[in-house]
Length: 240
Length: 240
DNA sequence: TGAATAGTGTCTATGAGACAGTATGTA
DNA sequence: TACATACTGTCTCATAGACACTATTCA
Image (cartoon, rainbow over all chains, first blue to last red; front, side, top):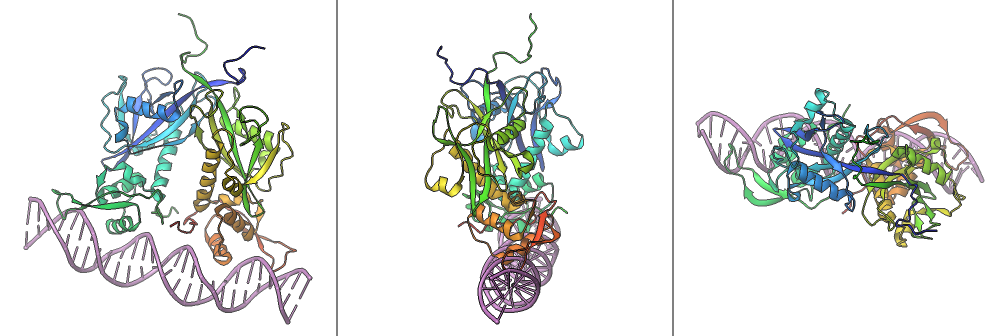
């Protein structure tokens, strides 16, 4: 009997693990995702989610943060929120070899237009509505993954304060409402929205500041509150 | 230049991928999880979630169903619900080697007391409250995983009809209420619960049957409805 | 008949939505 | 002053919770 470096049976199948990133932002009243155009096979030339393989000695979350910075040039401190979405392991999702992909969902306020990140591939910030309406087929199973990320985002705005993570540190109620309107794709009543947000404890905290320069009465400036969940939630209008 | 069987660079790190199962059921008014006692190192003798490695040519979901049947003897048709919870990839979560674990959450009505499943290791159905209160430390990071599964379950009962998946195909409103009370650990008003459930479209559908034999008026029998989400949701009482 | 559970009625408080009205800035 | 946006007041309707009440069974 020989001593093995690993105590796990060597017959156990090992596979590459990737992280894919759903990087969402709100631009011009639209929910958008960052996509890159693939510069290598397979799916050469098609749009895809940014991502890459997890390295030895690197946790999943570390890999996600590393890829995020590499692909967008955005420093972690500028990222509003990141969470794991789920893991995709269908056998044929990568035609080369069986690859497990762990998808992460990130919200970034004021995402800078990517001028080719670490690598020199093409990147763009594309409205979700455009991807859906033009039936743009992303590489791999990324259309599915993106769709799941968008749906989770829409749902999470209902019962968490995560909409604030699409805003800069200081924001007005109007900016926050614009996030809801962009993500949900509906219009909200400004008056009722203002009351709901400011009365839900822990959602937003007032500051002494107000914005200047716009037309109309200056808006008060708020920062994110402490709550992790909204109670009661801010429900979307009934889908019938 | 030689032709490679795989087009993915061989320097890409490959790792074992496991699935772990959070198998929940309601027994004697308590939310319970199925645990197994480990028969091998590491964590020999400690309680752990059932699970195992994903095989070559096997999808994550297939592996979860296979392990579920192997560990519990429960046929897939008897499983009320299964969904992916998340993926855990901390570097040192397995002391032998870096292992990625994809956790699945399953709801099983009338889970039979496991009399040693496929393998001959010890298994038990343990109340969540007991695991938490006795600070039972599960193997690996399974305490965390279980906790996340329980919390997701509690949250999902609010806005989905998944509580029905803890019940047999035909059930009474009282049985459904018992699920909520067990999972949330609170008492609910029978009258208000009855009205809420029966008036939320798509939650439950009435049948022509009624139960016989109990004391008191026979209860009507319902089956699961078609809705995927509850609107409006059935919120837990405010946590203050 | 009484006990027990199923299910309905009803009152109240709270919150959402519609929308009018007031506040406070710029052009 | 006109206008635009911020914010508040108020009315109505729907729903949750408390709990009284009725319905239907078994012992």
